[in-house]
Structures are given as structure tokens and as C-alpha cells.
Length: 66
Image 1: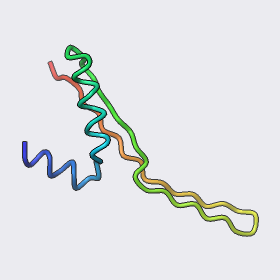
Image 2: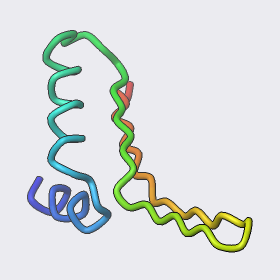
Image 3: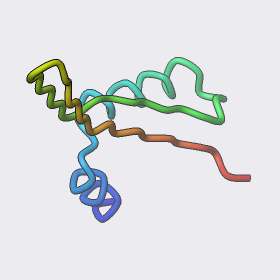
Image 4: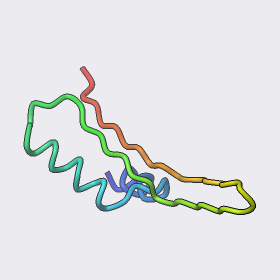
């Protein structure tokens, strides 16, 4: 479990995402799927009639394996 937690941290899963998934699993224990998505970084630049936008979106999906 420690290795799994370290890998999630290295990828960029935030504490808020972890809490959202935990709450979803606790509210419906028989749920077979839980997910969370968050934009972790965003950049917007406007100049001379153009706009450049870049964003980093982190998605976490937890599925029950059968």
C-alpha cells in the first residue's frame, strides 16, 4: 500500500481527489466504480488577438475487479 500511495503522489493526485473518492466509496459501499478529476495546473496567455491555454488534468479511476 505504501508503494501505491507513493506512486499516486508522484503522479500528482491531490488530497482533495483522494477525499472525493473515499467519500464516494463510503457513501455507497457496493459501488464498483469511483473517479475524480481535477485540473492541477493551468496557464493562459493572451497576446495580439491570440490565446494560448495549457492545462494539466489529473484523473483517477478506481474499479472493482472480478
